[in-house]
Image (cartoon, rainbow, N blue to C red; front, side, top):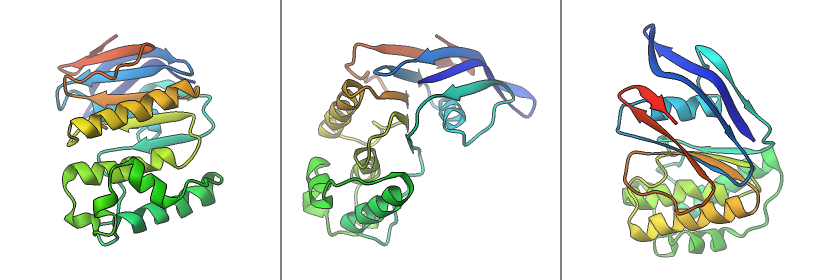
Length: 201
């Protein structure tokens, strides 16, 4: 579903990481791990098409892709419910229809208590949950997630793990970055470790 061959990216004529090769099948997870500043976000942005490689190529057979990056894509002056309604209208207009009621999404994400609050008043973890809601708004083949566990408590981490397992069980695939010690408890996992600007599988 997603592959890279001799993938390289340079910044100021210096490689951010060594050339990468990998192949991610349906039902599989690509875990991109390493400390902050080692190139994880650069790699996930290359996979999402936000950046273009210096050399090599990325190929994907996924028809529908959802990318959640560091910039969460939620509007501070809208409530949680209003943000989710906006996301649903935008995504459904561009990628088909999703019949899941916003009320159900709010409940699934554990945001019922703050559903009518402006997102600028939420904690970092609640804002992350709000952003991750878009993953539940359509039958996406491929998820690309940059630090999905950051700012989440134990319940939030378990929620992401559950969402991820359901996605993989449906035949989806995912590439995600992490700088923490938590590893998603899935069986079909391959890892790329980014160490001091050098990636190793």
